[in-house]
Length: 332
Image (cartoon, rainbow, N blue to C red):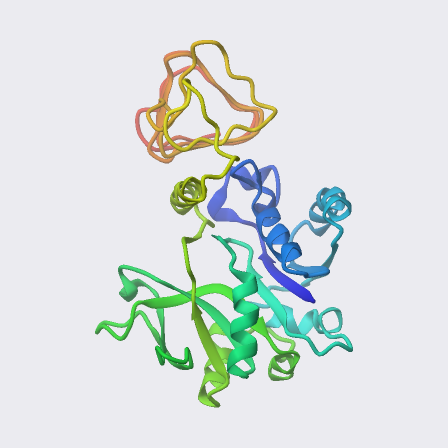
């Protein structure tokens, strides 16, 4: 079984972190974002993952070579010479996705984090006999999104409504699909949207079905949602009583500690530390009695001095912060 991950381009919304590495390689819960997806795909029997990418493919492949061996899964790239949207990359990677098995293949947006119930999705896809399955998730404010209107008992998708002013439903596209190979015959090799052009056509033929995603979901492509996604991920680990969570008298709340981390004597780690709603880049340090909050983002190799306050500072790589950042600003 195969899968395609829509990696995309420059990751400008997550700068300065993406100035150091491509967005899918930015760490999330102590490992690269994209590795969460690859591990979930491997666990349900996927043998080859194709990365649809138009930025730094060499960096991606070089980094993932070690994981390719460790996980026993083939990882290849399909490189775009121009942005092809969310459907064009499938047409470009057609030869990599099609084989003699006739099996359906997964498509995932690389920004999506969830519990990845992919085994259940395979069973759902087999049960309805349609051409395509999409995962949907419930949201509190559907007027901000494109809503998927579906028949509740069967999951058959009736139509899509973009940012509805009147309530038509509360389920949105979660960016995880399982598609029959025949779907590729519907896609031309040009910039095109799978959500706006391909799926509505399949739905009109009553061959598109939606499965409601159990558990949490978040698109973590921008800092505020990245932080929210991390909280949801940690909450999910707690509900499962996961051994990945740290424990001990120095830990408060849900905390992941990487094996490379060094925790000094007398330290207290948890939700009430002085780093709040912020992202600390690789090889960076935060001094004693410093306070970092309000979507502060430290790039790679940034050093915040003792007793410094950062209120929403976005600091580019290789900087030393010796004075407080009192209001949101970019430090170059």
